[in-house]
Length: 133
Image 1 (cartoon, rainbow, N blue to C red):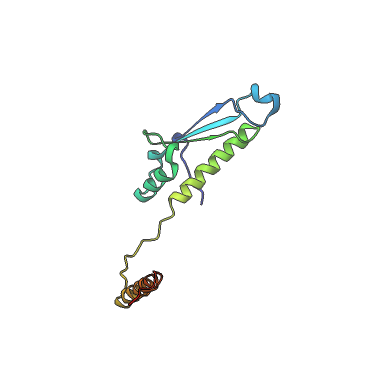
Image 2: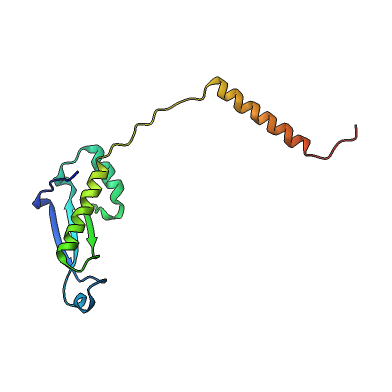
């Protein structure tokens, strides 16, 4: 599922990257830091909460999601990877968790549990030293 993120919600900054690139790495700024304004995406409340949870430290207090990619040798590849990661995170945020239904143990289940506890108790009692009665 791909999302149309408005251009006004994204800002890109290019940084000098450590990593692959040989001597080129010292001269060219290939790493990309992408900032997405989450409020501009107009996410439903459940997706917004889940995205904040998924993002963790990558979410600023101002509501910006910050993704930094420095894996590839070119700006274009790093930019594409950053967009892929943002898309992946938004897709995960839109997945609703299954609603948990509270259940109670049945009377028979409670009885089985108590019976097994009594059985174990008897086994442990028999482990002691025999009494001379």
